[in-house]
Length: 79
Image 1 (cartoon, rainbow, N blue to C red):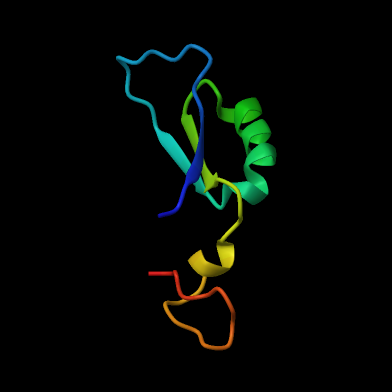
Image 2 (image 1 turned 90 degrees about the horizontal axis):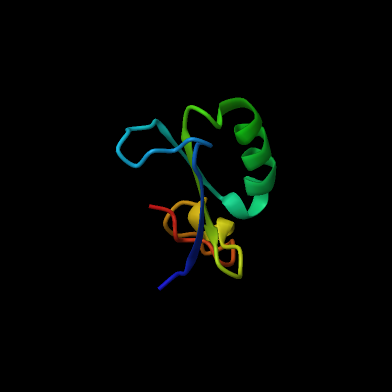
């Protein structure tokens, strides 16, 4: 039951009928803006960029830890 924010950057001359390499970025709450700028400047004509982050509260402690940890609060979501 987690809501996500998904941002998609298409090439300037994107055509739905064509296939494009796609780069997925997770943990986008932290780095999406910087990566989107870099990506657009260097690769915008070649790839689709997809940034996936959380809607609202950031939950990176949950996602980037192993399945169960009784010491670190909020951990246990990694699979």
